[in-house]
Length: 90
Image 1 (cartoon, rainbow, N blue to C red):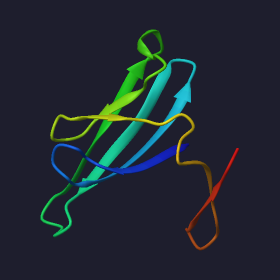
Image 2 (cartoon, rainbow, N blue to C red):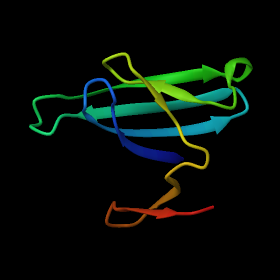
Image 3 (cartoon, rainbow, N blue to C red):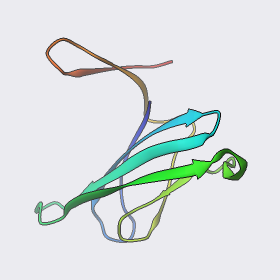
């Protein structure tokens, strides 16, 4: 699992994106929330393998493109017994 955290340039919400690259393409989800927490929503996304290019993007709920970095901010994620996620760099 790949992770990226940023601020949307359009709606100014905080953004968390997670995605996985597989043989059939990229699947993931984007979550956004405003500083005052009046907005808290998200959306799944999928990019078929034939459409995956060097500049992978996800769409914010507001419609703005969020460019996903290469390498991502964090990679991995093994879940511990207390349900906390420990991020690991690969």
